[in-house]
Image 1 (tube, rainbow, N blue to C red):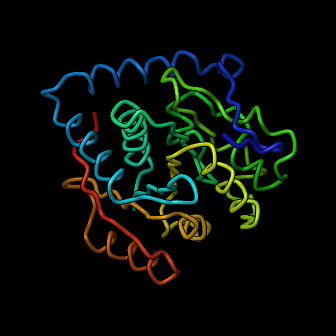
Image 2: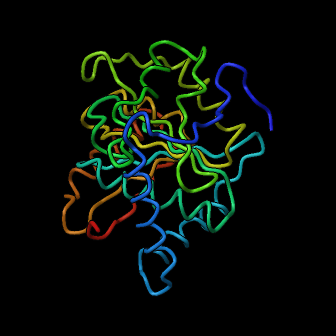
Length: 241
């Protein structure tokens, strides 16, 4: 595999420095419990979704970049992202990079779920560039699944979105990983989320069953489409585990 000298995606083997080992391990055991039980509906749904993604998203120039966003709480997209990353790895035997691309509330979502709220990551790359950033990517207990946490913005919501650095980050990630999954915040809460989504091959809008209002879902979809996102798909998720 090609390897970028400035951001080589050589993940850390442990998150002990940030107290994340316990949470990473809990996530891994929970996924094993869910996915390895064949009667589990969530397992079947995410396995099937993995196969559909393999069939529908094929790039000749590198990996596929997919964004996941919820009109409301980021917890829905965090759960979906973690489950899908595990299934892409177990079903397709593919390397996966999860990127928490939310520029606010880093304690919520993938970063918080994996205990990496004190780790630098996505925000620092956008603000400061690539130099000496290899350590920002963390390995998870699932071999082949790595994560780039949200990072620590200078003031909540104040990190500028440098589109050149974002494009460079995703270009390098596509070389190393067949699947790059971005957790993106609601496009209605922060316009930076819309700009991040435009760099992806598709955006999955996650509607929570019996929770998400159709009016809000339509508003999110229209904002994304009107700003240049060409492929927006709505996925209905069930109750939280």
